[in-house]
Structure formats: C-alpha cells, structure tokens
Image 1: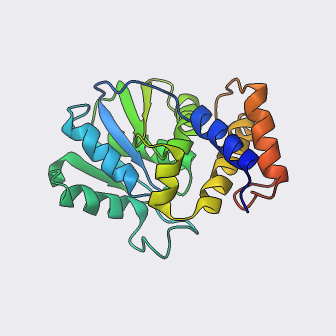
Image 2 (image 1 turned 90 degrees about the vertical axis):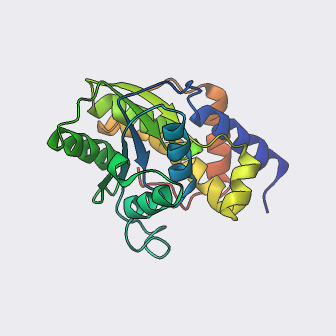
Length: 216
C-alpha cells in the first residue's frame, strides 16, 4: 500500500528531478529511449514548435522494453514520429545505446558521422529523468549547451499513463539514487541535492521502493 507520506515524498522527488528549463531553439533534439512513448510525443511536439530541425532517437532495449519494443526503443520512437507526421528526412536513429551515457556518446558520434554541426542540444527524457540526463550530457559532451525537456505532466497524470503507481515510485527512487551515486563513479556531473529531497528518497527507499535501485 502507498501511504500519504509515500505520496508526499514521491511528489518531492518528481518536482526535483525536473530542471525547469524553458525550451528554446537548439541544433538538434535528442529523444532518449525508454519504455515511455510519451518521450517521442514530446520530441515531436518540440519539433513542430520549431525548436530544432533534426531529431535523434537513441536506444536499444532494456528489461522493461524488450517485450513491448522488440525492434528497439529508438526504432519504435521513429515509427511514432512518422505516424505523427514528422518527415523521415528529419529523423536519425541510434539503435545501440543501453544506458544514458551511451545515449549521449553514441548520439554525439552519429551526428559527427553525419556531419551535423551541433552547438546545443534539446534533451528530451521522461519527466523523472530530466536532471540525470542533463548531468550526464554535461559530463560527456562539454562542447554543447544542454537544454532539458520532457512531457509536461503532473505525477498523477504520468502514473495514469503508465498504469502502475508502484513502478513509477520505484523508478523515482532509482533515478534519485543514481543522481547522487553516479558523480562518484564519474558518470555525471555533481549537483546539489537539498536535504529535504535526500530525506524523501531515504524514506521511500527504506519503505521498500527498491526494484530500480542499483547496488552501491
């Protein structure tokens, strides 16, 4: 059962994980692969608003997506974008990345291979992955300016779209743990985390929301 305190803590993490950047025109939009086709929808919306002329969808499969996205996350995102009217010429697919670091590095390599001049990227992720995606890009792609974006949704709306409240809370806990752990491993830049956010994370972790926690 999810308690009132669990919900309060989940909202704390949800709000913190979003960077609050105002979208602005960038050289390219990069949609980070996941189980959530809403990332593709958000990327298409930003493309239609003129925020970038070119999209990169990046991602292979994971334990969460191997059943529902057998062609690979990036390919399913591409198909979704085509259904929504994006021209094929405006989409590049990077099909091999299996984590956020590879999303960034492999997308950078693909764009260099295609001769695309990149000074800024609009990084589109799930709402609760914005901050870690940003921190990863700032670590690995120093030459570009990074703007973060995701679907504009409240926590309850997102849970309804996914259909599994406990899974979403588990993922929030996993995202928060990695935000603190990964700078120590050299994967991301460090960011300040308020004590209130740390306390909310610890309560949820200690309350058993741990299926997405990585070994420390």
